[in-house]
Amino acid sequence: MRSKKPLSLEFVGFLQALGLVFYCGLVSLLFWQGNNLFGNTPNYWGPVLFLIIFSFSALVCALVTLGYPFFIFWEEKKTKKALKLVSLTALWLLVFILLGLILALISK
Image 1: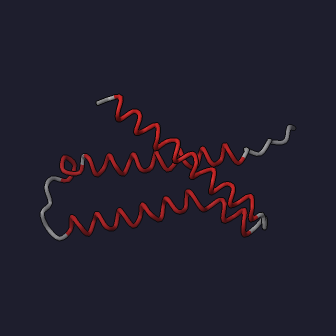
Image 2: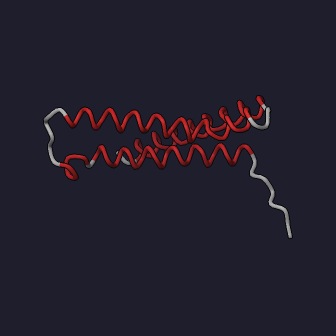
Image 3: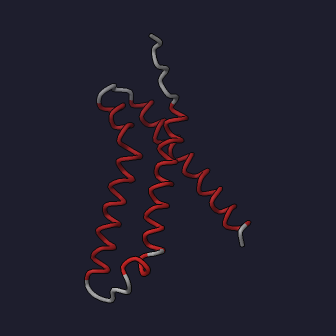
């Protein structure tokens, strides 16, 4: 039986950033089509729902970005490796932001 080769930190950072982009895309789709899905809700519950979704999104983004690096830091005691992974994820997010800006400018 072959042993599985562990994923590189660069690839894990890419996957974490891609997961964040995908999740943010789904939440953006919900906000973009919110009136079509739920109708116009000019009452107390609209802002409350927005804040709950916003808070939940912050939690999900923190878990996706910091969950594995925390495991590396806490369980494996590899501080530099954990910080490198957070930095790589941030770098990949920057790449996705720049690609999104380029696509937005091209599609204008």
